[in-house]
Image 1 (cartoon, rainbow, N blue to C red):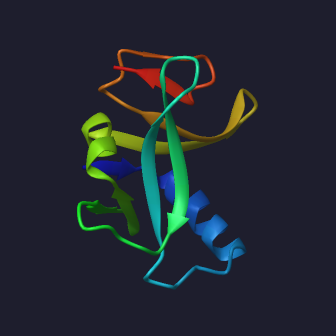
Image 2: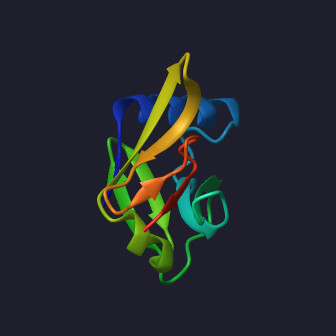
Length: 110
């Protein structure tokens, strides 16, 4: 399962509204893990409307989250959160599978 915090849900809803895709059930949040970043792996977030046969599909707090099977192996029991504080603004992941993360929180290693 991939979880979504209340703050992340609210921000996702705002972005979907700004992008004029709110209320369109075919759109979802795609979460991926890609190579790169200072710790070796990075998170990637996109809105998408095309599901692939091997996609893993979850819904938490009304947010449909889709990930490919390879990325899901790194994301099991991860929570997507959002911060708008002074120390940084944006989405971040609380990933229990990460052995280390970089200072910016956008990169991790297992």
